[in-house]
Amino acid sequence: MNLLGFETNPKDTRIVVAMSGGVDSSVAAALMVEAGFEVIGMTLQLYDQGMALGKKGACCAGQDIYDARQVCDKLGISHYVLDYESRFSQAVIEDFADSYLKGETPIPCVRCNQQVKFKDLLTTARDLGAKALVTGHYVQRIAAEKGAELHRAVDPTRDQSYFLFTTTQNQLDFLRFPLGGMPKTETREHALRFGLEVAEKPDSQDICFVPNGSYVSVLEKLRPGALEEGEIVHIDGRVLGRHKGIINYTIGQRKGLGIGGCDALYVIRLNPESHQVVVGPYEALARTEIWVKDVNWLGEDMLSPIHCEVKVRSTRPPVPAKVYLEKESHARIVFLNPEYGVAAGQACVFYDGNRVLGGGWITREENGK
Image (tube, rainbow, N blue to C red):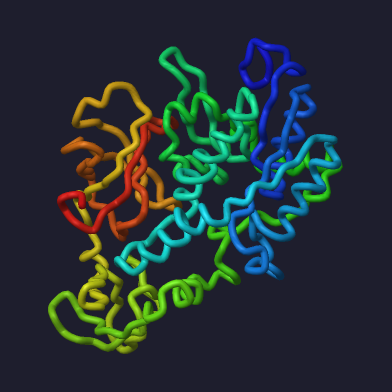
């Protein structure tokens, strides 16, 4: 059995590596070449290359496509660039804009994995006769009796399992993640060992298509009128001031509210219909239960309720909860202890220890709509 778990000889096994031009995917490709596989590097052009000019840390455009090609030349493997700009715009960028206008806090990286990378790219890899699609994500795929399981990375500071909760069982059977068992420092060491020019390249930004981190400017361009003014209202009904667009706010936000002179206040909820930003004390952020939609399940038979841990933001630790499957693809999450600052549009990911059981999208409505 070889490095990726196949019984076939590596030299007789074709592998496609998703290459963004960063150090992680470059090292993943180099490790596959070193192991003797027939490797094809594939990069997706996802948005206007001019958008990323002069922007450090952008992936899948401009300089990064060039870097991916340079790595493939160094490794002596084929490299293909697929133009998915239209697909990415529709499935990720447009969804990103619409989510903000609905008072949500979206995660475009998850949508990209779900709608483009692990869907269209995976299909292309299969069409090429590949046995697997390899990526540079920090997550582990563990072969088990009942099928492949998705687990957190060995390095908790690099773990990306939260962003891969939409991965289906069929996709997981085809995917491989060679970096999930190592810390980032080891990845950098491999890059130096292979002599890759990207060895010291900074990590890419979470939102690749947002120049200089200014998502508001992107939203203004995509949705003229997105900065419609409205009231900043206390939960007791008092009007405390005005804002310049609810897209500037997210649940749990404290700084930058523009209502100086008040006690410590946090954004409690956003009302897009009335263009109101509702604020209040920290304790008003407490949630004992939430609803999620579009549930993806990677565990065994889902017997409701499920006692597990859930993670409601990428930067938050998992907390104990019960998951009730209320209707098709929807679930109610009951926290054992109140959670604070839960935002619609974020993911709620279910864990059993290090294993990812699945997850869903947090909704604004209590009935899961």
